[in-house]
Amino acid sequence: MKYYSLKNKLHKVNFKEALFNGLAPDRGLYFPKEISELNKSFISGLRNYDKSEVSLNVISQFIGNEIDKNSLIKIIEHSIDCEFPLKKIDENISVLELFHGPTMAFKDVGARFTARCLSYFIRKGFSKKVTVLVATSGDTGAAVASGFHRVEGIDVFILYPKNKISKIQEKQISTFSDNIFPIEVEGSFDDCQKMVKDAIIDKDLAFNFNFTTANSINISRWIPQTLYYFFAFMQLSSNIKKTSFSIPSGNYGNLFSSVISKKLGLPIEHIISSNNINNPVERYFESGIYNALTSKETLSNAMDIGDPSNFKRVQTIFDSDLRKMKNMIYAFSFSDTQTKNAIKELLDNFNYISDPHGAIGYLGAKKYINDNLGSQCIFLETAHYFKFYDEIKSIINKDLKVPSQLNKILNKVKNSIQIKNYNQFKDYLNLTI
Image 1 (cartoon, helix red, strand yellow):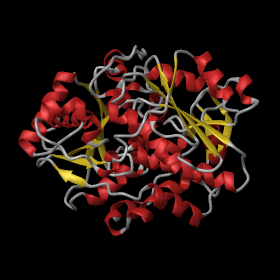
Image 2: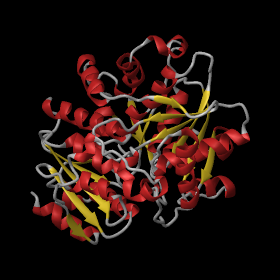
Image 3: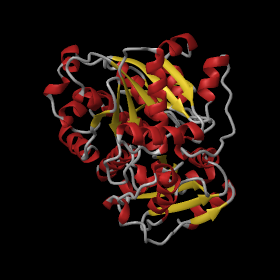
């Protein structure tokens, strides 16, 4: 498998090089040169396979022969070592829970896969010490800190926006040490992401650091996320031949993975981009002109992104043809008030507790079903509701049990440093040499 830069199709690399580079030298995202549809009998017979077998079939073409089969199976099994249950909400809407991993968020799979792939190549002598840079709006940082902690040969710097993630998310990031360096940034997620991109191509830093990123701009993040949609189809009733997915969307890595899954042959009818008020894609669909927005703070903080990096990949897969995109993708946005009402509705009507991001996914599914009567839609619940306990406790008005994965970090001491700008970030990186 070859990947090319979206800014220069002549710049081509293999999986290993794309993994370690993170971004192309021209700041372009890497994109697969070709995507081969999977065998139709495999797709129709998904229920006959286990998760590992399905995962190997789905992922193999994106890795090529660069990781031997036995090692790839071990990497995959480590990455998906949790449940991904599909639960029915009503006769048309179901929820796919993606929060049963170690940090209780959907990012666990991609973070663990990235860590193990990097570690595999380091052990093979492809690279010496690697420095991973990560910008996070919450769950990515937690998943990366957990997935990379004490992985030999890798240091990780995690940048998160001050006072713009939940207290539990901050605990999950800022209480790590050893090879994990948490950094609190006075600014937005977009500011954090720009610092990461600037550092990766900074020639002064390149002399001393071998940089990559574990954000969803890295191919190793979206590749395993394609599995979610296959896991959902494995659990669907046999009389349901196709369904749509409502995806709470921030940086659009997960939505891009769903488009790839359809390209691989899954019978996905439509894909719903469900957003909070940070909705540049919905505005693009309405006006035909894409403009980045200044991000605004909301209850669903992981989606407070005004210029989603992975949307460029989504555009590419549709040949930048807006008409083609709108034939497949719906784009909806919802306010904090609507989000709170959805959390209450899910609890009161269906006895289901949702986090704010999942609630937006539910709202997208509900609106889609209203426009497409009789259709089926699955929304993604991307994080455990307790991660947002302070944000939702007044809405649900009931005592909540602390999950064991979160209980063990609540009393740990914060261990992050604070910075205001890129120069301070650069100085801090150089201090760690």
